[in-house]
Length: 607
Image 1 (cartoon, helix red, strand yellow):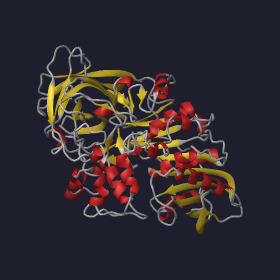
Image 2: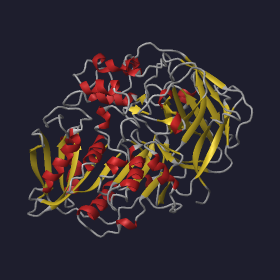
Image 3: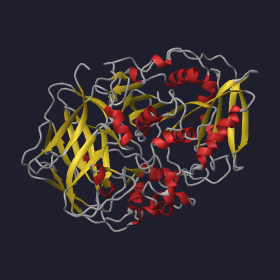
Image 4: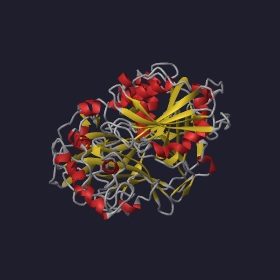
């Protein structure tokens, strides 16, 4: 999603990343909420209300507010996961002088209407709910929003409509638009999003038979191997979901289905008037939305407040906020008072409290390995040294024991590396669940056929890599289409290969006019056995110190299943409708004329 000095959603971000000039503190305390509203209000629950939208469809809303004859700012959360499950956080804020409204989105649980996760009516529904709340006698007239994941989408969709009473938003672990993360990751269908679609195929949560969302079983493995992909929900005997069919059949961002629900880009960001505070984790499956939105709002927000977004990224997964992931303990500073930080933000913009929030750095990122926070005035960090690490080898990079090498020296005359990608025998992803579990041990999949590896010698000094990453591959395939997948790994002295992040690109989504970079709106022609240059933006940035004795490794494959669904290599315009795979012979070039490399955001020592 984000890469070396360029961001995938358009050239308007390129200029912003290049123009970052403010300094960053070397290290800082964790994001500090400071003082925020104290708990002191008695909670009142006022039950479910039905609120009519502009087309007459009523949405169900639960209201919680202090037991007092007064007006309070309101926080709105719109969810497809059952508003009844959101009570705990609501009560925490009510105790601190806020009213909270939890709403089932259109077509889910107690709300009426037809359900489609990406119905553009969700945009206007958000506007109507904000303005209805502002008109209530117990509302101060100021409304904010919060919520995780899909509930972050609902916030951005609402904000693009610029409801006058919306004053602040806190989108948490929010995905970007739909070709930069889910259901499509740079042209590749994401396996967990197919599971999510199955879970959501109905008015209430749907349990996928014999191992569904959240569980990895042979049945799930076989389901996602089934072709054509468009038949998945029928195979699982789920309720009818016409929108799932649309996901697969409309596989370019130019389709009206996707254009209508898009919220990113200059046209949308320039309509948003309110300040935003976002959070994500280095292992968040929806990571790209947070930095993309930060950069987009900084350049295009409609007001000075909107152009001062805030962002926190920690050593977390999509749902975790703790200090431990797998075998890694990131220390007590990895756990932050997130509700308190949110409350301070709302205090400033919904209550008008002068709490010096503007004096706090807008960017906080946790650096793994050193296990310390950095605070900065911008993203990417202004002191970043964009450093090319080149692939080298003698033709044996497919050997896990020896492999190729990685260094900052450009290649000379070197033989190619080759591997075979058979869609019927895909490379297994190193994690088994639908979400990323943390820095998993990549050795679970690295030794399989169809994987190339390039590794530095053991490091003599620290190397901090903090920021977005790009790979530039010179490659050819015997097929008319294929996928390229690149991973960054921290190899520990004991052999543990911690997977930090990765980038993927469908070959036909390469855009020659943009230097081979991803373009979600067009398909390029791929001629078999012709060398092309591919620019692969890693969809997750990272912040990691490679310690002395560790090694930096880059892996390349053409599948990583079941996290990503397979490309069948047919060259068809829509892989989701294909059934017959084609075996591809893949070649990676690294010589004077074809210097394949990754660009790592290295932070100089002492900065």
